[in-house]
Image (tube, rainbow, N blue to C red; front, side, top):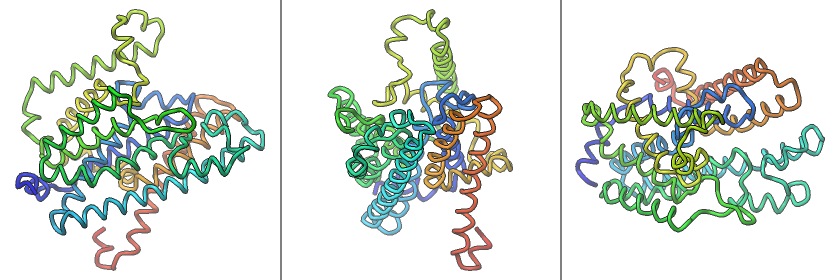
Length: 380
């Protein structure tokens, strides 16, 4: 292991900003998955080029590099690799359970004629005629029901992580360069995973792996520290880019304002180019992360505020909260399309979903504490 990497891993302290970011991403994904909901106008994707998916993938790479890098430091790389594969298996198991229950719930609602159009809306049009075929393709990741694409993406990224971690611990710069090369090649040659019969994954793993590796690279090299934050010109440049991105995004939401955008902007910066992780999306996320970590250091007193604790807790239990959020977004969408879709109802559905996600996170945390010895339970 490279000595500088070893020193950075050993010096790392608990950072609540990681869990806060995952919590924000979880809540954002929930409201973004409810169409025609006024609350999702407040999420990150409406104010720039990146969104909640970028938060998930980058923080996952950062956090996994720290956690399993420390395991490699203390117990060896082989143990760290087996722990990663164990996490990948849990992720896949959660995906399978969620997939089966999710498509069954959608099919039931459609068959009861409460909202039959959701079969096509949720990308499972063959579930009524060929349920077994849909199930088998889902198990091998060849189906992509709406709102499960992000969880699906995390499975191949987690499978790649042992190899990426091995490189990051020994040659971090070379590993990042290889990741960028794969990203460029995937965009150039059109590499992507397939969805039956002739579609592609919403999130291209060959491209999105770069954001995960980038997160791991920042973690093991310590490049996110004070050295970059001391560059005032870089802060100005990052802020200017965020303002530019927000202006472009807001103008694209208005047909009247979009008419004033140059053709080169309209043709180059497309709001839907999340499949192959557009370079301007990566730059936007990095600028946002850079300024966020500058203005909110790890020891910022605001991170201890009571209202933020629920968000942080949702980040600590992100997988369970994400799975619950998928069902809640489906339930919220169903409530709004079968009832009075008023603004007050949209806000109520969103707040109820937030409360339910926080309740699940707190229950899981409480349940985990009960399995600890009494002495450790008091400290947790």
